[in-house]
Image 1 (cartoon, rainbow, N blue to C red):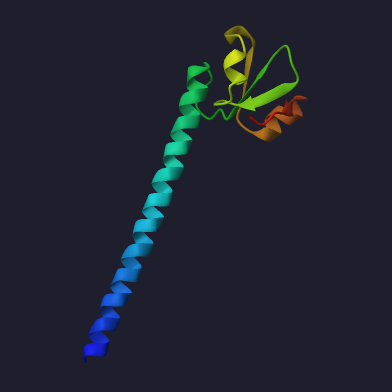
Image 2 (image 1 turned 90 degrees about the vertical axis):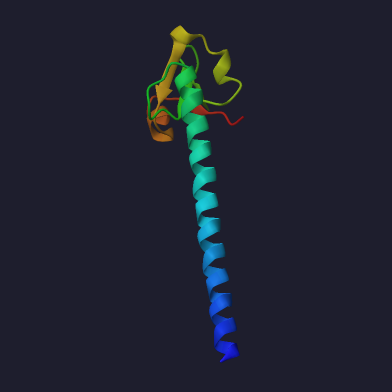
Length: 95
């Protein structure tokens, strides 16, 4: 009887820990996504933008890259994906 009760408590604690961990990971992921979209928005790009490049270059960067901040607003090109940037002849630079 005691063994069954202890086993139920252990299972409950395990499930609670797994649920907590999944919620924590989801929250952390959403915060990163919000930060990326805020960086892109500050650069003048529409929702869904993940990368930016300059009309005067063949390089593109994530919106939170320090190089992205150096692009003049009138020269910014916004990309929603790596594929979109590469299709236009841009090369990714990691920061």
